[in-house]
Image 1 (cartoon, helix red, strand yellow):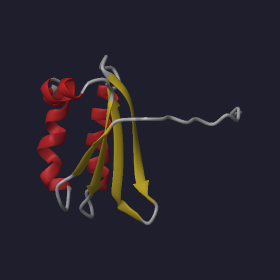
Image 2 (tube, one colour):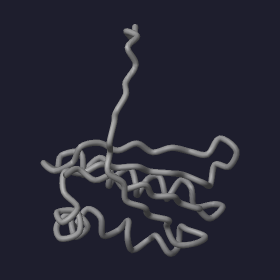
Image 3 (cartoon, one colour):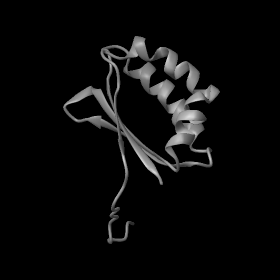
Image 4 (spheres, one colour):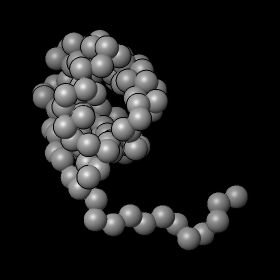
Length: 106
């Protein structure tokens, strides 16, 4: 069953660019993983140092046993204590419905 992770970040002042550079590298690499579904990064409109990432994968066990151990994640995980004001807030979700716009986009 697909699983979605909602991850909130409280980035230290002055570390936003480094945070995004490292995270973008991970996001670019993981899009090629066969178990990957999608990801979207959001910024808090009132505070550029608060971000939320959600990512959906096909299997939770695969994420724990394989994906989190990928070499392209090493620099990202190692840098997190220097980038964040507090540990990430991670929650796990299972989708029960998905909606998309019925309006055509130009």
